[in-house]
Image (cartoon, rainbow, N blue to C red; front, side):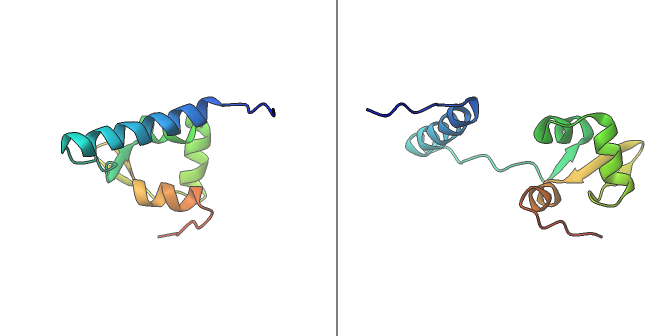
Length: 89
């Protein structure tokens, strides 16, 4: 019998799918990702440092909007970058 290794990512993916299934069974809507994310949320999502995030902004890889000193990033742009299809402004 071959052994399979289960990673944390596998468990997180399983948890997310299980929670979605439970919400469907309970009749609750599945939560959509936020349209706009703040810097700390992007850093956590991508598991990058503040310096790396700044580099992505400066070189135009990750478009952003600044409102009152707070930087916002579109979730859609982040997903495009992760999929290897960055769209510049």
